[in-house]
Length: 188
Image (cartoon, rainbow, N blue to C red; front, side):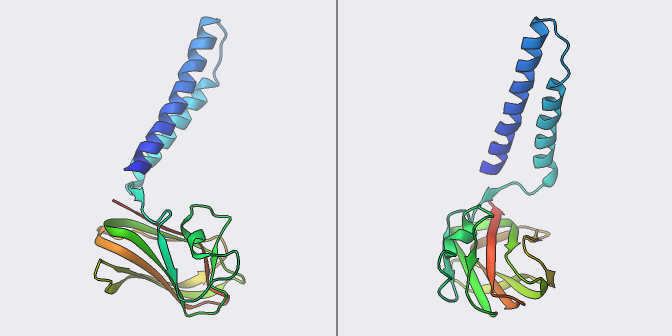
């Protein structure tokens, strides 16, 4: 809901700028077509939010994170949930490795997005597991494919996943040390 509100407020801001241009240039009797671009931006942003159908809140942002082994210096686990694509969590080791995000309580999950940190590119195998408060995991999806640095892996279940408190990403196979730039969990 916060994401939707933020995006609609941004669209409203663009609309106010466009109306300001129309008022100022209209009262000065100057023909100005640039304010139309702001109408277009506002409409595009609002459409993008409603058409995506995902909506929801960034549940993993700033959440508690645990990992399979001590990280590389400067590549701490919270870097994977800081919404900053320039930072990353680095395990400092080969697969298998895992990272687990505690959402703080049960939530309905609509989408899970993972930003790959990997060099060199190659065949990887990642399992996305989810668990409720009892901490009993089930496999939500698997990614078995060639991946490259800065590639987004996205999972949007056909029906939202209810009562999810923990999301664990297990990397079973990778050509590089295991690392993630972002782990995003979107839901209610």
